[in-house]
Length: 270
Image 1 (cartoon, helix red, strand yellow):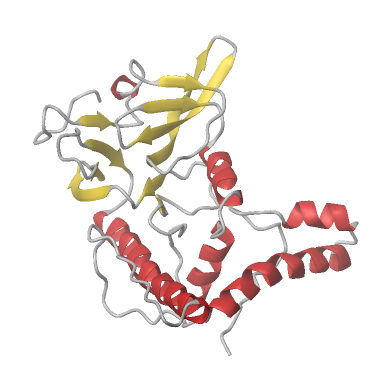
Image 2 (cartoon, helix red, strand yellow):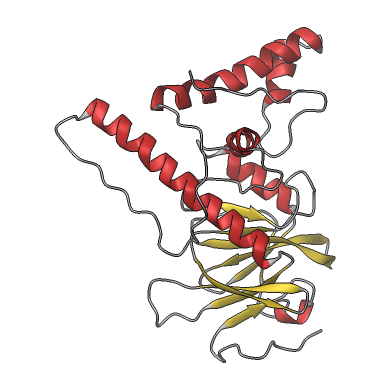
């Protein structure tokens, strides 16, 4: 470990979480942290790093090249991120279930995240789609390059434990979901302002997949799904689990992993 891969530009940032030497000296320390729009990677350290009385478990990498070490786990950071967004990990789980997918991204528009393993695993690392540029296989892993619109800014290269095929597929899914969301937004926009137009651009950096049969949903159906999903879970937990309304509400407030024993409920378009 510790050897910089061949072929990387000298002025780019390179990180490998399995090799502490690539991030330990330049990283900032933060007991708590919130994922931002410029975050490109969230991953667990190979070994917990104890400095003073604080244990750091996760590295969060920014498109600027800055690394922040955080005491929260990757799944805790992603849960908080999901809780503050309209499109939660639960919605991504539903879309994956509709499409019969085992591995799927957490879709949050352009700021979507690709897990390197099942999102239910505590140690999953997350790759953001927004600043993705290129990838190439390297030593049983993949080197993923991220870049900003300003070409004068150094690129960031991260070694991830994803296959080229898996990462390509999931980035392609993000693109397909963006196209589907664009359709929903445009329909909703026409309902409010029928005399106007709404054009949304799908990022050109994401790979295209072969035709994918994504269920067509109307804006009203999507809104209703978001509301009903939580309400139905609260009712089911209160009835079956014999919980109080407060306990059921707390148990149903999940974004990465569903409560044990709660079956996933599909929402079919009429």
